[in-house]
Length: 567
DNA sequence: GATTATAGCGCG
DNA sequence: AAAGCGCGCTATAATC
Image 1 (cartoon, rainbow, N blue to C red):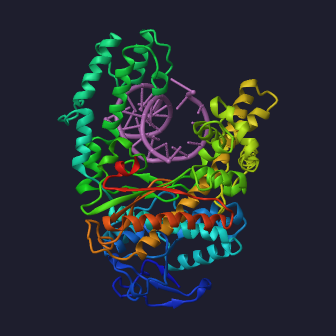
Image 2: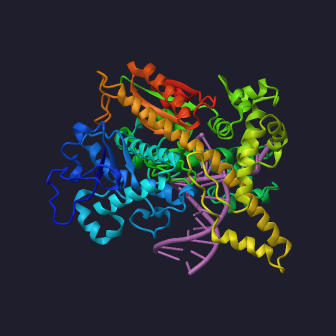
Image 3: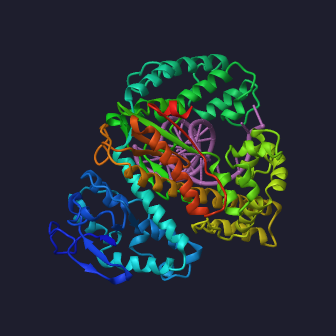
Protein backbone atom coordinates (compact mmCIF):
# COMPACT_ATOMS: atom_id res chain seq x y z
CA UNK A 1 0.00 0.00 0.00
CA UNK A 2 1.14 3.49 -0.77
CA UNK A 3 0.57 6.30 1.69
CA UNK A 4 0.77 9.49 -0.29
CA UNK A 5 1.72 12.47 1.77
CA UNK A 6 0.59 15.77 0.34
CA UNK A 7 -0.04 19.28 1.61
CA UNK A 8 -3.65 20.09 2.48
CA UNK A 9 -5.86 21.37 -0.31
CA UNK A 10 -6.79 25.01 -0.04
CA UNK A 11 -9.65 25.46 2.38
CA UNK A 12 -9.09 22.15 4.09
CA UNK A 13 -8.22 22.35 7.72
CA UNK A 14 -4.80 21.16 8.72
CA UNK A 15 -6.04 19.30 11.76
CA UNK A 16 -8.85 17.38 10.15
CA UNK A 17 -7.03 14.14 10.89
CA UNK A 18 -6.34 11.87 7.98
CA UNK A 19 -6.16 9.73 6.09
CA UNK A 20 -9.53 10.71 4.78
CA UNK A 21 -9.67 9.42 1.27
CA UNK A 22 -8.65 6.52 -0.77
CA UNK A 23 -8.23 6.42 -4.47
CA UNK A 24 -7.10 3.94 -7.05
CA UNK A 25 -5.51 6.08 -9.65
CA UNK A 26 -2.01 5.25 -10.82
CA UNK A 27 -2.65 1.57 -10.42
CA UNK A 28 -2.08 1.85 -6.73
CA UNK A 29 -4.31 2.10 -3.79
CA UNK A 30 -3.40 5.37 -2.26
CA UNK A 31 -4.42 7.09 0.89
CA UNK A 32 -3.90 10.77 0.92
CA UNK A 33 -3.26 12.36 4.24
CA UNK A 34 -1.95 15.56 5.61
CA UNK A 35 0.94 15.61 8.02
CA UNK A 36 0.33 18.62 10.23
CA UNK A 37 3.20 19.75 12.41
CA UNK A 38 4.92 16.44 12.49
CA UNK A 39 1.98 14.33 13.52
CA UNK A 40 1.47 11.21 11.49
CA UNK A 41 -1.92 10.76 9.89
CA UNK A 42 -4.19 8.73 12.09
CA UNK A 43 -4.21 5.12 11.10
CA UNK A 44 -0.80 5.22 9.53
CA UNK A 45 1.32 4.64 12.58
CA UNK A 46 -0.40 1.40 13.45
CA UNK A 47 -0.06 0.23 9.90
CA UNK A 48 3.43 1.44 9.16
CA UNK A 49 4.80 -1.99 8.42
CA UNK A 50 2.82 -2.48 5.27
CA UNK A 51 2.86 1.08 4.09
CA UNK A 52 5.25 2.74 1.73
CA UNK A 53 5.11 6.44 2.32
CA UNK A 54 5.22 8.45 -0.86
CA UNK A 55 6.15 12.10 -0.71
CA UNK A 56 7.84 14.74 -2.76
CA UNK A 57 10.84 15.12 -0.54
CA UNK A 58 12.01 13.06 2.42
CA UNK A 59 13.95 16.01 3.79
CA UNK A 60 10.75 18.01 3.90
CA UNK A 61 8.52 15.58 5.77
CA UNK A 62 10.55 13.03 7.62
CA UNK A 63 12.37 15.29 10.12
CA UNK A 64 9.00 16.27 11.62
CA UNK A 65 7.92 12.69 11.99
CA UNK A 66 11.23 11.82 13.63
CA UNK A 67 10.85 14.76 15.95
CA UNK A 68 7.65 13.08 17.10
CA UNK A 69 9.48 9.79 17.52
CA UNK A 70 7.93 8.19 14.44
CA UNK A 71 10.08 5.99 12.22
CA UNK A 72 9.11 5.22 8.65
CA UNK A 73 10.03 1.78 7.37
CA UNK A 74 9.80 2.39 3.62
CA UNK A 75 9.23 5.35 1.36
CA UNK A 76 9.40 6.59 -2.18
CA UNK A 77 11.05 9.97 -2.55
CA UNK A 78 9.49 11.28 -5.75
CA UNK A 79 11.93 14.12 -6.16
CA UNK A 80 14.98 11.84 -6.00
CA UNK A 81 13.28 9.28 -8.22
CA UNK A 82 12.30 11.96 -10.70
CA UNK A 83 15.86 13.15 -11.03
CA UNK A 84 17.16 9.65 -11.69
CA UNK A 85 14.46 8.93 -14.27
CA UNK A 86 14.86 12.24 -16.08
CA UNK A 87 18.53 11.47 -16.57
CA UNK A 88 18.41 7.76 -17.25
CA UNK A 89 19.13 6.55 -20.75
CA UNK A 90 16.70 3.65 -20.31
CA UNK A 91 13.74 5.98 -19.73
CA UNK A 92 14.76 8.72 -22.15
CA UNK A 93 11.69 8.22 -24.32
CA UNK A 94 9.19 8.12 -21.49
CA UNK A 95 6.45 10.63 -20.89
CA UNK A 96 8.19 11.59 -17.68
CA UNK A 97 11.52 12.33 -19.33
CA UNK A 98 10.14 14.20 -22.32
CA UNK A 99 7.73 16.44 -20.43
CA UNK A 100 8.68 20.06 -19.86
CA UNK A 101 10.25 20.75 -16.52
CA UNK A 102 7.77 20.74 -13.67
CA UNK A 103 7.50 20.92 -9.91
CA UNK A 104 9.73 17.89 -9.44
CA UNK A 105 12.61 19.45 -11.31
CA UNK A 106 13.40 21.89 -8.56
CA UNK A 107 17.10 22.48 -8.40
CA UNK A 108 18.86 22.30 -5.10
CA UNK A 109 17.78 20.97 -1.79
CA UNK A 110 14.50 21.96 -0.24
CA UNK A 111 14.85 23.72 3.07
CA UNK A 112 13.05 22.04 5.91
CA UNK A 113 11.11 25.13 6.83
CA UNK A 114 9.28 25.68 10.10
CA UNK A 115 5.60 24.76 9.95
CA UNK A 116 4.28 28.23 10.53
CA UNK A 117 6.01 29.65 7.48
CA UNK A 118 4.73 27.07 5.07
CA UNK A 119 1.68 28.92 3.81
CA UNK A 120 3.73 32.03 3.16
CA UNK A 121 6.33 30.01 1.37
CA UNK A 122 3.69 28.39 -0.81
CA UNK A 123 2.44 31.74 -1.95
CA UNK A 124 5.93 32.81 -2.85
CA UNK A 125 6.82 29.66 -4.78
CA UNK A 126 3.75 27.63 -5.68
CA UNK A 127 5.67 25.73 -8.37
CA UNK A 128 8.08 24.14 -5.96
CA UNK A 129 5.37 22.51 -3.83
CA UNK A 130 3.49 19.85 -5.77
CA UNK A 131 -0.07 19.37 -4.63
CA UNK A 132 -2.00 16.15 -4.29
CA UNK A 133 -2.94 15.91 -7.95
CA UNK A 134 0.62 16.57 -9.02
CA UNK A 135 1.82 13.82 -6.68
CA UNK A 136 -0.60 11.28 -8.06
CA UNK A 137 0.24 12.25 -11.61
CA UNK A 138 3.93 11.92 -10.85
CA UNK A 139 3.46 8.46 -9.34
CA UNK A 140 1.67 7.41 -12.51
CA UNK A 141 4.35 8.82 -14.78
CA UNK A 142 7.14 7.18 -12.80
CA UNK A 143 5.35 3.85 -12.71
CA UNK A 144 4.95 3.99 -16.46
CA UNK A 145 8.59 4.94 -16.99
CA UNK A 146 9.99 2.06 -14.96
CA UNK A 147 7.42 -0.53 -16.03
CA UNK A 148 9.99 -2.51 -18.03
CA UNK A 149 13.01 -1.57 -15.97
CA UNK A 150 13.13 -3.55 -12.72
CA UNK A 151 16.67 -2.47 -11.96
CA UNK A 152 15.76 1.18 -12.15
CA UNK A 153 12.87 0.44 -9.85
CA UNK A 154 15.34 -1.05 -7.40
CA UNK A 155 17.49 2.04 -7.70
CA UNK A 156 14.57 4.31 -6.82
CA UNK A 157 13.73 2.26 -3.77
CA UNK A 158 17.37 2.12 -2.67
CA UNK A 159 17.79 5.85 -3.15
CA UNK A 160 14.65 6.44 -1.10
CA UNK A 161 15.84 4.16 1.67
CA UNK A 162 19.06 6.14 1.67
CA UNK A 163 17.07 9.32 2.14
CA UNK A 164 15.42 7.81 5.22
CA UNK A 165 18.79 6.80 6.64
CA UNK A 166 20.22 10.23 5.92
CA UNK A 167 17.38 11.97 7.74
CA UNK A 168 17.71 9.59 10.67
CA UNK A 169 21.45 10.16 10.96
CA UNK A 170 20.88 13.87 11.06
CA UNK A 171 18.17 13.34 13.65
CA UNK A 172 20.35 11.33 16.00
CA UNK A 173 23.60 13.08 15.16
CA UNK A 174 27.11 11.69 15.36
CA UNK A 175 28.07 11.39 19.03
CA UNK A 176 30.94 13.79 19.59
CA UNK A 177 32.99 14.52 22.68
CA UNK A 178 33.79 18.23 22.68
CA UNK A 179 36.24 17.77 25.51
CA UNK A 180 38.30 15.22 23.56
CA UNK A 181 38.19 17.40 20.47
CA UNK A 182 39.55 20.32 22.48
CA UNK A 183 42.30 18.06 23.84
CA UNK A 184 43.34 17.10 20.31
CA UNK A 185 43.43 20.73 19.25
CA UNK A 186 45.40 21.79 22.31
CA UNK A 187 47.91 18.98 21.79
CA UNK A 188 48.61 20.06 18.26
CA UNK A 189 48.03 23.80 18.24
CA UNK A 190 48.56 24.79 21.87
CA UNK A 191 45.87 26.33 24.02
CA UNK A 192 42.98 28.10 22.30
CA UNK A 193 43.96 31.71 21.60
CA UNK A 194 41.57 34.54 22.26
CA UNK A 195 40.00 36.31 19.31
CA UNK A 196 41.42 35.42 15.92
CA UNK A 197 45.06 35.30 16.99
CA UNK A 198 47.20 32.47 15.63
CA UNK A 199 47.34 29.49 17.94
CA UNK A 200 50.70 29.33 19.77
CA UNK A 201 52.20 26.44 17.82
CA UNK A 202 51.33 28.07 14.48
CA UNK A 203 52.81 31.37 15.61
CA UNK A 204 56.08 29.67 16.51
CA UNK A 205 56.25 27.95 13.13
CA UNK A 206 55.47 31.21 11.34
CA UNK A 207 58.41 32.86 13.09
CA UNK A 208 60.64 29.96 12.14
CA UNK A 209 59.56 30.11 8.50
CA UNK A 210 60.24 33.85 8.35
CA UNK A 211 63.67 33.39 9.89
CA UNK A 212 64.69 30.56 7.59
CA UNK A 213 63.54 32.40 4.50
CA UNK A 214 64.98 35.73 5.58
CA UNK A 215 61.55 37.30 5.16
CA UNK A 216 60.66 38.94 8.48
CA UNK A 217 57.24 40.20 7.38
CA UNK A 218 56.09 37.15 5.39
CA UNK A 219 52.50 36.02 5.91
CA UNK A 220 52.65 32.21 5.63
CA UNK A 221 48.98 32.16 4.66
CA UNK A 222 49.64 34.08 1.47
CA UNK A 223 50.41 31.59 -1.27
CA UNK A 224 51.90 34.05 -3.77
CA UNK A 225 54.13 35.58 -1.10
CA UNK A 226 55.32 32.20 0.14
CA UNK A 227 56.03 31.09 -3.41
CA UNK A 228 58.01 34.25 -4.12
CA UNK A 229 60.13 33.87 -1.00
CA UNK A 230 60.80 30.18 -1.70
CA UNK A 231 62.03 31.04 -5.17
CA UNK A 232 64.09 33.96 -3.87
CA UNK A 233 65.79 31.39 -1.66
CA UNK A 234 66.71 29.34 -4.69
CA UNK A 235 64.10 26.62 -4.44
CA UNK A 236 62.86 25.46 -7.89
CA UNK A 237 59.15 25.30 -7.05
CA UNK A 238 56.18 26.33 -9.17
CA UNK A 239 53.59 26.09 -6.41
CA UNK A 240 53.44 25.80 -2.65
CA UNK A 241 51.68 22.46 -2.65
CA UNK A 242 52.69 19.78 -0.22
CA UNK A 243 53.92 17.26 -2.73
CA UNK A 244 56.15 19.77 -4.44
CA UNK A 245 57.70 20.89 -1.17
CA UNK A 246 58.17 17.46 0.33
CA UNK A 247 61.74 16.31 0.03
CA UNK A 248 63.25 19.69 -0.79
CA UNK A 249 66.44 20.35 1.06
CA UNK A 250 65.92 23.66 2.82
CA UNK A 251 65.46 24.44 6.52
CA UNK A 252 62.26 26.38 5.82
CA UNK A 253 60.51 23.40 4.28
CA UNK A 254 59.83 21.37 7.41
CA UNK A 255 58.29 24.22 9.42
CA UNK A 256 56.30 25.32 6.37
CA UNK A 257 54.81 21.87 5.89
CA UNK A 258 54.07 21.65 9.60
CA UNK A 259 52.46 25.05 9.48
CA UNK A 260 50.23 24.09 6.57
CA UNK A 261 49.12 20.95 8.36
CA UNK A 262 48.21 22.83 11.52
CA UNK A 263 46.64 25.65 9.58
CA UNK A 264 44.37 23.19 7.86
CA UNK A 265 43.34 21.61 11.15
CA UNK A 266 42.72 24.98 12.73
CA UNK A 267 40.67 26.47 9.90
CA UNK A 268 38.73 23.37 8.87
CA UNK A 269 38.12 21.57 12.16
CA UNK A 270 39.33 23.92 14.87
CA UNK A 271 37.54 25.56 17.76
CA UNK A 272 35.35 27.68 15.50
CA UNK A 273 34.18 24.56 13.70
CA UNK A 274 33.50 22.81 16.99
CA UNK A 275 31.39 25.68 18.30
CA UNK A 276 29.46 25.99 15.09
CA UNK A 277 28.78 22.37 14.22
CA UNK A 278 28.88 20.42 17.45
CA UNK A 279 26.58 21.93 19.98
CA UNK A 280 25.92 19.56 22.88
CA UNK A 281 28.15 16.73 21.77
CA UNK A 282 26.34 15.83 18.57
CA UNK A 283 27.48 16.60 15.01
CA UNK A 284 24.48 17.00 12.70
CA UNK A 285 25.56 17.51 9.10
CA UNK A 286 23.15 17.43 6.22
CA UNK A 287 23.69 14.46 3.95
CA UNK A 288 22.77 15.23 0.36
CA UNK A 289 21.48 11.98 -1.09
CA UNK A 290 22.41 11.64 -4.74
CA UNK A 291 24.32 14.89 -4.40
CA UNK A 292 27.19 13.67 -6.58
CA UNK A 293 26.75 12.97 -10.31
CA UNK A 294 27.75 9.37 -9.81
CA UNK A 295 25.05 8.86 -7.18
CA UNK A 296 27.32 9.12 -4.20
CA UNK A 297 26.11 11.22 -1.33
CA UNK A 298 27.37 14.70 -0.79
CA UNK A 299 27.19 16.66 2.40
CA UNK A 300 26.61 20.20 3.36
CA UNK A 301 27.70 21.95 6.50
CA UNK A 302 30.73 21.04 8.50
CA UNK A 303 32.48 18.98 5.85
CA UNK A 304 30.98 15.75 7.14
CA UNK A 305 32.63 13.54 4.51
CA UNK A 306 36.10 14.95 5.12
CA UNK A 307 36.55 14.46 8.83
CA UNK A 308 40.33 14.25 9.16
CA UNK A 309 41.71 11.20 10.89
CA UNK A 310 43.37 13.54 13.39
CA UNK A 311 40.08 14.38 15.09
CA UNK A 312 38.25 11.06 14.89
CA UNK A 313 39.20 10.42 18.49
CA UNK A 314 36.50 12.93 19.36
CA UNK A 315 33.80 10.75 17.85
CA UNK A 316 32.78 8.82 20.94
CA UNK A 317 29.90 6.57 21.83
CA UNK A 318 27.62 7.34 24.76
CA UNK A 319 28.27 5.76 28.15
CA UNK A 320 27.60 2.02 27.93
CA UNK A 321 27.48 2.20 24.13
CA UNK A 322 30.02 1.60 21.39
CA UNK A 323 30.69 2.43 17.78
CA UNK A 324 30.68 -0.44 15.33
CA UNK A 325 32.76 0.70 12.37
CA UNK A 326 32.49 -1.19 9.10
CA UNK A 327 34.51 -0.78 5.96
CA UNK A 328 33.80 -2.49 2.64
CA UNK A 329 37.18 -3.78 1.49
CA UNK A 330 38.29 -2.88 -2.07
CA UNK A 331 34.72 -2.02 -2.95
CA UNK A 332 35.27 -0.51 -6.38
CA UNK A 333 37.43 -3.29 -7.84
CA UNK A 334 34.93 -5.85 -6.59
CA UNK A 335 32.09 -3.92 -8.16
CA UNK A 336 34.01 -3.86 -11.42
CA UNK A 337 34.52 -7.62 -11.25
CA UNK A 338 30.76 -8.01 -10.81
CA UNK A 339 29.89 -5.53 -13.54
CA UNK A 340 32.14 -7.19 -16.07
CA UNK A 341 31.56 -10.78 -14.91
CA UNK A 342 35.30 -11.20 -14.63
CA UNK A 343 35.52 -14.49 -12.75
CA UNK A 344 39.28 -14.43 -12.40
CA UNK A 345 39.12 -11.07 -10.76
CA UNK A 346 36.33 -12.24 -8.50
CA UNK A 347 38.45 -15.28 -7.62
CA UNK A 348 41.39 -13.05 -6.63
CA UNK A 349 39.18 -11.41 -4.04
CA UNK A 350 37.42 -14.50 -2.74
CA UNK A 351 37.85 -14.89 0.98
CA UNK A 352 40.81 -12.51 1.08
CA UNK A 353 42.14 -9.06 0.37
CA UNK A 354 41.74 -8.60 -3.37
CA UNK A 355 45.08 -6.90 -3.79
CA UNK A 356 46.82 -9.70 -1.90
CA UNK A 357 44.92 -12.13 -4.09
CA UNK A 358 46.49 -10.48 -7.13
CA UNK A 359 49.92 -11.04 -5.62
CA UNK A 360 49.08 -14.66 -4.81
CA UNK A 361 47.90 -15.22 -8.37
CA UNK A 362 51.18 -13.86 -9.69
CA UNK A 363 49.57 -10.88 -11.40
CA UNK A 364 51.82 -8.36 -9.66
CA UNK A 365 54.68 -8.69 -7.22
CA UNK A 366 53.45 -6.55 -4.35
CA UNK A 367 50.20 -5.48 -2.76
CA UNK A 368 51.19 -1.90 -3.36
CA UNK A 369 51.59 -2.48 -7.09
CA UNK A 370 48.21 -4.19 -7.16
CA UNK A 371 46.55 -1.24 -5.50
CA UNK A 372 48.16 1.52 -7.52
CA UNK A 373 47.63 -0.43 -10.72
CA UNK A 374 43.98 -1.08 -9.96
CA UNK A 375 43.39 2.57 -9.14
CA UNK A 376 44.99 3.44 -12.46
CA UNK A 377 42.58 1.09 -14.20
CA UNK A 378 39.58 2.65 -12.47
CA UNK A 379 40.65 6.26 -12.92
CA UNK A 380 42.37 6.06 -16.28
CA UNK A 381 45.93 6.61 -15.16
CA UNK A 382 48.43 6.89 -17.99
CA UNK A 383 51.69 7.65 -16.27
CA UNK A 384 53.98 6.53 -13.51
CA UNK A 385 53.85 3.29 -11.64
CA UNK A 386 50.20 2.57 -12.32
CA UNK A 387 50.73 2.71 -16.08
CA UNK A 388 53.65 0.33 -15.69
CA UNK A 389 51.44 -2.26 -13.97
CA UNK A 390 48.41 -1.87 -16.23
CA UNK A 391 49.51 -4.33 -18.94
CA UNK A 392 49.73 -7.07 -16.33
CA UNK A 393 46.27 -6.30 -15.02
CA UNK A 394 45.00 -6.22 -18.58
CA UNK A 395 46.37 -9.69 -19.19
CA UNK A 396 45.05 -11.10 -15.91
CA UNK A 397 41.59 -9.51 -15.98
CA UNK A 398 40.73 -8.82 -19.62
CA UNK A 399 36.97 -8.67 -19.05
CA UNK A 400 37.26 -6.08 -16.31
CA UNK A 401 39.63 -3.94 -18.30
CA UNK A 402 37.47 -4.19 -21.42
CA UNK A 403 34.51 -2.98 -19.40
CA UNK A 404 36.14 0.26 -18.22
CA UNK A 405 37.81 0.77 -21.58
CA UNK A 406 34.44 0.58 -23.30
CA UNK A 407 33.04 3.15 -20.87
CA UNK A 408 36.00 5.43 -21.56
CA UNK A 409 35.60 5.18 -25.31
CA UNK A 410 31.87 5.89 -25.09
CA UNK A 411 32.65 9.02 -23.12
CA UNK A 412 35.26 10.08 -25.64
CA UNK A 413 32.59 9.83 -28.32
CA UNK A 414 30.37 12.09 -26.25
CA UNK A 415 27.97 9.29 -25.35
CA UNK A 416 26.16 8.52 -22.12
CA UNK A 417 27.15 5.57 -19.93
CA UNK A 418 25.08 3.95 -17.20
CA UNK A 419 25.59 2.12 -13.93
CA UNK A 420 24.34 -1.38 -13.25
CA UNK A 421 20.99 -0.14 -11.93
CA UNK A 422 20.66 2.43 -14.69
CA UNK A 423 21.82 5.79 -13.43
CA UNK A 424 23.23 7.58 -16.46
CA UNK A 425 26.10 9.98 -16.82
CA UNK A 426 25.38 13.53 -17.90
CA UNK A 427 26.24 14.64 -21.42
CA UNK A 428 29.23 16.89 -21.76
CA UNK A 429 28.29 20.56 -21.68
CA UNK A 430 28.00 23.12 -24.46
CA UNK A 431 31.55 24.29 -23.87
CA UNK A 432 32.83 20.76 -24.46
CA UNK A 433 31.08 20.65 -27.83
CA UNK A 434 32.40 24.06 -28.71
CA UNK A 435 35.98 22.99 -28.09
CA UNK A 436 35.44 19.88 -30.19
CA UNK A 437 33.91 21.92 -33.00
CA UNK A 438 36.77 24.43 -32.89
CA UNK A 439 39.30 21.65 -33.33
CA UNK A 440 37.55 20.45 -36.49
CA UNK A 441 37.65 23.89 -38.07
CA UNK A 442 40.00 24.18 -41.07
CA UNK A 443 41.72 27.09 -39.40
CA UNK A 444 42.24 25.18 -36.16
CA UNK A 445 45.79 25.30 -34.88
CA UNK A 446 47.73 22.61 -33.13
CA UNK A 447 46.86 24.04 -29.75
CA UNK A 448 43.11 23.92 -30.39
CA UNK A 449 43.47 20.32 -31.49
CA UNK A 450 45.50 19.26 -28.50
CA UNK A 451 43.09 21.05 -26.22
CA UNK A 452 40.24 19.09 -27.76
CA UNK A 453 42.16 15.82 -27.46
CA UNK A 454 42.95 16.46 -23.81
CA UNK A 455 39.33 17.28 -23.14
CA UNK A 456 38.15 14.18 -24.95
CA UNK A 457 40.40 11.98 -22.85
CA UNK A 458 39.33 13.76 -19.67
CA UNK A 459 35.68 13.02 -20.40
CA UNK A 460 36.60 9.43 -21.11
CA UNK A 461 38.25 9.17 -17.70
CA UNK A 462 35.09 10.57 -16.18
CA UNK A 463 32.78 8.05 -17.85
CA UNK A 464 35.26 5.23 -17.18
CA UNK A 465 35.10 5.99 -13.49
CA UNK A 466 31.40 6.81 -13.53
CA UNK A 467 30.25 3.25 -14.15
CA UNK A 468 32.38 1.90 -11.32
CA UNK A 469 31.97 4.66 -8.75
CA UNK A 470 28.25 4.89 -9.56
CA UNK A 471 27.64 1.17 -9.23
CA UNK A 472 29.67 1.13 -6.01
CA UNK A 473 27.37 3.87 -4.74
CA UNK A 474 24.40 1.66 -5.61
CA UNK A 475 25.90 -1.23 -3.69
CA UNK A 476 26.44 1.10 -0.75
CA UNK A 477 22.81 2.28 -0.89
CA UNK A 478 21.62 -1.31 -0.78
CA UNK A 479 24.00 -2.01 2.09
CA UNK A 480 22.86 0.92 4.17
CA UNK A 481 19.19 0.13 3.47
CA UNK A 482 19.71 -3.45 4.54
CA UNK A 483 21.65 -2.47 7.66
CA UNK A 484 18.99 0.03 8.63
CA UNK A 485 16.25 -2.56 8.32
CA UNK A 486 18.17 -5.22 10.24
CA UNK A 487 19.13 -2.87 13.05
CA UNK A 488 15.53 -1.94 13.65
CA UNK A 489 14.58 -5.59 13.63
CA UNK A 490 16.95 -6.21 16.54
CA UNK A 491 14.47 -4.40 18.75
CA UNK A 492 15.02 -2.46 21.91
CA UNK A 493 17.86 -2.80 24.36
CA UNK A 494 17.56 -2.28 28.08
CA UNK A 495 20.35 0.28 27.95
CA UNK A 496 19.23 3.76 26.97
CA UNK A 497 21.75 6.07 25.33
CA UNK A 498 21.43 9.79 24.75
CA UNK A 499 20.08 9.49 21.22
CA UNK A 500 16.63 10.96 20.69
CA UNK A 501 13.60 8.74 20.17
CA UNK A 502 12.83 6.50 18.47
CA UNK A 503 16.48 5.41 18.75
CA UNK A 504 17.22 5.90 22.45
CA UNK A 505 17.29 2.17 23.11
CA UNK A 506 18.12 0.93 19.64
CA UNK A 507 21.33 0.59 17.66
CA UNK A 508 21.32 3.14 14.87
CA UNK A 509 23.41 4.40 11.98
CA UNK A 510 25.35 7.55 12.73
CA UNK A 511 27.82 7.94 9.88
CA UNK A 512 28.20 6.92 6.26
CA UNK A 513 31.20 7.56 4.06
CA UNK A 514 30.96 5.99 0.59
CA UNK A 515 32.17 2.52 1.58
CA UNK A 516 32.18 2.78 5.32
CA UNK A 517 29.52 3.07 7.96
CA UNK A 518 29.32 3.55 11.69
CA UNK A 519 26.63 2.18 13.98
CA UNK A 520 26.08 3.54 17.47
CA UNK A 521 25.01 0.58 19.57
CA UNK A 522 24.60 -0.52 23.16
CA UNK A 523 27.84 -2.25 24.12
CA UNK A 524 26.02 -5.52 24.73
CA UNK A 525 24.87 -5.59 21.10
CA UNK A 526 28.27 -4.97 19.49
CA UNK A 527 28.66 -8.53 18.24
CA UNK A 528 25.18 -9.01 16.90
CA UNK A 529 25.31 -5.63 15.18
CA UNK A 530 28.60 -6.54 13.54
CA UNK A 531 27.08 -9.76 12.26
CA UNK A 532 24.11 -7.93 10.80
CA UNK A 533 26.34 -5.38 9.09
CA UNK A 534 28.41 -8.16 7.54
CA UNK A 535 25.36 -10.12 6.41
CA UNK A 536 23.86 -6.96 4.97
CA UNK A 537 26.93 -6.53 2.77
CA UNK A 538 26.47 -10.02 1.42
CA UNK A 539 22.80 -9.33 0.82
CA UNK A 540 23.64 -6.13 -1.05
CA UNK A 541 26.00 -8.06 -3.29
CA UNK A 542 23.29 -10.61 -4.06
CA UNK A 543 20.76 -7.91 -4.82
CA UNK A 544 23.05 -6.34 -7.39
CA UNK A 545 24.99 -9.24 -8.83
CA UNK A 546 22.72 -12.20 -8.24
CA UNK A 547 24.56 -15.50 -8.34
CA UNK A 548 27.78 -14.11 -9.77
CA UNK A 549 30.36 -15.24 -7.22
CA UNK A 550 31.80 -11.94 -6.04
CA UNK A 551 32.45 -11.39 -2.34
CA UNK A 552 31.97 -8.17 -0.44
CA UNK A 553 33.97 -8.62 2.74
CA UNK A 554 33.67 -6.03 5.43
CA UNK A 555 36.30 -5.11 7.98
CA UNK A 556 34.65 -4.66 11.34
CA UNK A 557 35.69 -3.29 14.69
CA UNK A 558 33.95 -1.84 17.66
CA UNK A 559 35.27 0.60 20.21
CA UNK A 560 34.25 3.56 22.26
CA UNK A 561 35.88 5.96 19.81
CA UNK A 562 35.87 6.04 16.02
CA UNK A 563 39.65 6.36 15.89
CA UNK A 564 40.17 3.28 18.02
CA UNK A 565 37.87 1.22 15.85
CA UNK A 566 39.59 2.34 12.65
CA UNK A 567 43.16 1.45 13.56
C1' DG B 1 32.94 46.59 -0.38
C1' DA B 2 30.92 42.66 -2.25
C1' DT B 3 31.31 39.24 -5.53
C1' DT B 4 33.65 35.19 -7.87
C1' DA B 5 37.81 32.38 -8.85
C1' DT B 6 41.68 29.71 -7.47
C1' DA B 7 44.89 26.92 -4.77
C1' DG B 8 45.33 23.72 -1.55
C1' DC B 9 44.06 19.86 1.36
C1' DG B 10 40.83 16.85 3.77
C1' DC B 11 37.95 12.40 2.65
C1' DG B 12 36.58 8.05 -0.29
C1' DA C 1 57.08 10.22 -6.59
C1' DA C 2 52.05 11.72 -6.23
C1' DA C 3 48.98 10.72 -11.05
C1' DG C 4 44.30 9.03 -12.99
C1' DC C 5 38.05 9.76 -10.57
C1' DG C 6 34.41 12.12 -7.30
C1' DC C 7 33.53 15.73 -3.70
C1' DG C 8 33.33 20.34 0.43
C1' DC C 9 35.46 23.86 2.64
C1' DT C 10 38.68 27.77 3.72
C1' DA C 11 41.58 31.72 3.07
C1' DT C 12 43.35 34.62 -0.14
C1' DA C 13 43.59 36.73 -4.73
C1' DA C 14 41.33 38.69 -8.42
C1' DT C 15 37.62 41.19 -10.28
C1' DC C 16 33.78 43.91 -10.45
